[in-house]
Length: 366
Ligand SMILES: *Cc1c(COP(=O)(O)O)cnc(C)c1O
Image (cartoon, rainbow, N blue to C red; front, side, top):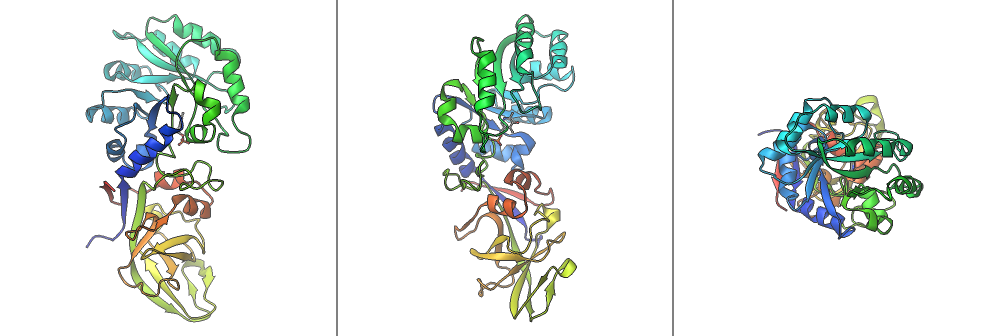
């Protein structure tokens, strides 16, 4: 028997979540963001659940190529644009739309020989200070692009740093508006947090929304809101089983560093899942786990291949009992990935993306 660990991708939940995100901007088109192997879900499986998208946005040219070979004929957007001149040849050949965020990318375009002019998304750095032209340089970039025969259409784009938090989007939105209000072209501004939390402010300015994490069933503003608050369903379940049971007495400790010590008799289960599977090593005693659908707590340190759990709330549990590290138990009980991420001091994005290649992935149309 193979080691009992398994990640299940819920394609119907992907479709459901995508529809939820869309409902916040019903007049806009929606990119499905499938970068990073669809946030760890696997591009091919995610594509199954996200066929209703108006386009797919990603970073990697190989992933763009993979989508074309799945026969996706609609828009594909490269969110970081081209990395070198010959990437433009692939854009021409596969009809990829690409972000232009710096002058070097405009130089490459100007030197590019193409039959079909390109659709580009000119990105403004409105305050996040990663990619894009500063507001005061944006117009010059637009004018330069607009003069190139290689360019057919220019859309306008920016990215919010704080759509999920207290700072909000007002300053960035104002910076964007001030420079772009009289420029033609479609606009795309919002990630999941922008789309869900700032739907009203962005409604008239969104030709395209760019939901990512919400589509994958995580609340962009957890713990202020949970996935359930937003009507989102888990799209990934990480499941394993109990492979050993130990009966502890007072004073017994568990695992490396003896970081947990029992203060009385305690029945614990050993689960076949560790940090080499992508379960975060930073999870400590108390992190929630579902054992046979019942909420239990992690005990002691996460090791490479195993974790240990307190079986007190699940006295029936024993060898072979299902353990859900995040996602949905076969009983239907849910363990939001956001709760596990928080216990590890990180975000659900990292957990999904860090799922290890040694974990088999299975698609289910639940
Ligand atoms: C990743 C990404 C998104 C999606 O962000 P979420 O927070 O996952 O919704 C949107 N836009 C750009 C440019 C991105 O890189």
